[in-house]
Length: 458
Image 1 (tube, rainbow, N blue to C red):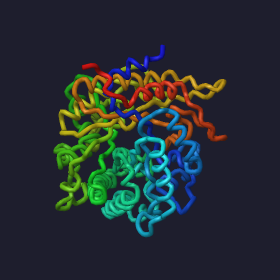
Image 2 (tube, helix red, strand yellow):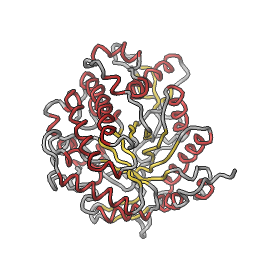
Image 3 (cartoon, rainbow, N blue to C red):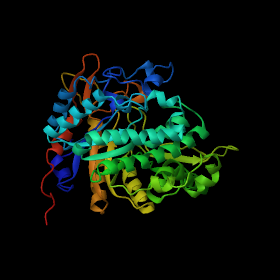
Image 4 (cartoon, rainbow, N blue to C red):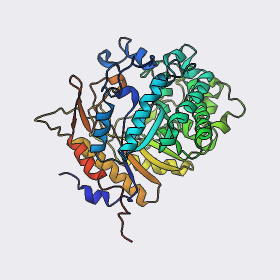
């Protein structure tokens, strides 16, 4: 049974934005072309044991060389907006120093191509591809990197800002901070709390400095931040597990939302780890907490935690708790759409938040092409269910303004390489052939109902 798009469309306001999303390193390839220099992900991918199968981003979806065809593909899906990221190593190849005009030219063509096709351009300035040269100075653990980001942001917006519809400073700082510096899963692969705490503050600072740079160039350009906030549930009703969930909320959400939306780090977090943070200089928190025009939520799966009884375990002192249901995607993530609603309600209760776009939501299912068709019904169901929750939130008065399916096409799934597929369009990596999946055809039918006058009567 395919969820009926007209009925679902009727639950959204006529100006709701339906889009698709990608990230530069995951699709572009052409890693040594036109002056681009290596990022930390190029180095990480080339180290044995870091990425599945030693896969790398050298070719990826070859989007850099297939730009016009891929823009036609986006247009064929009938979506109103495209969220993409800009590769810092293309623009300022060494992180600081000379600007690479050929890199800016590529994004000029991308943005102009979107405009020519009537598609809104939502740009992300940082989606994890830090120029490798900056790693030599400590990368995100160094304060100087925040100022390098500010200059990069100003450079990009000076060139492209007149044609962008919205810009985000960072994508999922949780990943580039905790997953990359504490858990060691993503580049640069550190497993060190002190490094992670430095990366935390300097990433937050870079966000604030980036907001200043963007507004200095284009005061009217809507600027935001994309956060993969975690919907956290205690493993049981036990008081210890409930307290663990509160600590986990501070650690996984509060250290980003608190500074940005309240100008402060969570108290429990600071009392546990504040003495290991870098110096917070006068003015830092004011820079970080400048008001935003919008924020983006990336949501995939809930987080379930229990109290960690081990002596001396670092804050938040939690261990994973088992999933509540049996439904999993092919990457092993629990499917639980109500968590999206619970999360948005809690975040809005705890913080004063601006308009929200769901900037990523989707599912990993690895079906291939059979007789020219990819029957990925579970992905279609996943997207439909999460859109249903989004419609519920709108009916409750939450300012949900748009939804971007992750992802436009199968791509380099970071540490998982090319074995995990999130696209609504299938990519045959050998031949670089794109095939729209069943979910993609369904999503196109839904997007085709927008933008229109308000769907609701009255």
